[in-house]
Length: 201
Image (cartoon, rainbow, N blue to C red; front, side, top):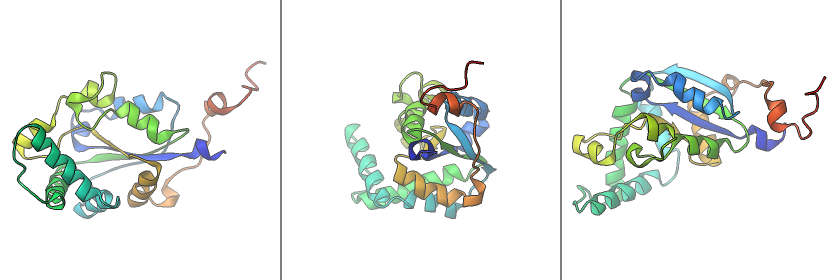
């Protein structure tokens, strides 16, 4: 199988997605594109795993802290932190509390441009500003402002890896190699066969 057909990405259906009974709808949206589900778990993550997940991306604390501080500034509010890393640590603490609050579905999806396709379908990180037609844009109404008011993470239903490199790191945190299945879907003949051979009898 050519390498582009094997691109993989990680998706987490977060506790709010589970509690709102959206597992089937979220999976359906990814599945109907032609991507292949190759790994699936249902679990309550540990604080250690969540921390490892976010900190596996070098510079994440500083980057997310800078974004958070900029969001405060945009709203003409003073950030509670002047150091982006300290601000990032606060965001991480909220995420740990959020993701360990209940069960999650953890998945690996595979296929051509899997990372980009999943990100497109998922929508932007903030549900309020996500496009209509995306999972976050259609299925929830949370916002950064409401999350900040309640001093909690934004409830945006899912996490999806941001790049191929990020996906490779994140998948290793949640899955052993033997837990990711190798199999063929019949529809792959339609998606990837150059000449559509074998359709006609």
